[in-house]
Image 1 (cartoon, one colour):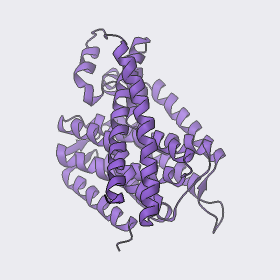
Image 2: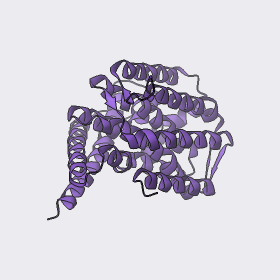
Image 3: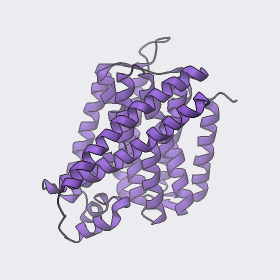
Image 4: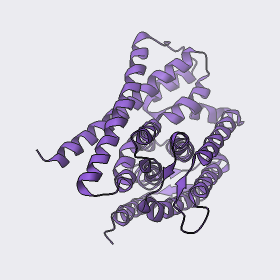
Length: 335
């Protein structure tokens, strides 16, 4: 059988394992948090808000451990671009329009812009001609930056109505609404513990074989690992955000759809790059630096402008998707 087909199959199975593992890990961790006495709101802004980015994090850690650190930044930057242009664009088309609330404009938009600027500042080389690389001290700065953001998010004085929204996860809407009405959680059971263990195993298993397939595909076809990562790996690890956001958009819950993107992009910029970067330095490949960075900056700017206008219309969603297609074409050097 064609080795490309075999590697593509391994890649696809690994992505499924990552996504399913993240889902089970998220569900069981959420129940564990509630069983330990954490409020539904705190669970919402911690476990739930971070859960959809676990595939990117595990993939990044595994990439460094497997000696392919260039995958980390390519995956994180590619995921952020996909989150905005692909996920928001498709969600706007499905939902007709996405409404940006005042709380997102006042808090999340500035934090997203600041986070992107900090990431770009860390990536830029100190002098002309120097290789773009993220070092361990810079990675520590990113992690500290996320800790500050995380603490601020928890202690930010949300109105009660917003707290009810933040603590809900669209894919578990009915159970969240029951919790909001004061119903007691069923507690953390043995089955939840088994799912937690299986979730962690699938995340580790999926990320390992995902990196393995990327390395071998890169060697087989002489394609830079960063190119495969910024497109294929980024899309694969962005699937949880896509599923959550499209469902939220179809239900008319724009704040949850957009809020998930804000949180995911900030997490990718600080933690998905920061934690693997503490393990080892992270170089940027040429395609990520010359194409990915400008597209990330432009996509974030468009997203901020759309947010300030308070609407992401369906035609804007179509424009976002067109830009993503152009991004793919540019990455592969078709024109």
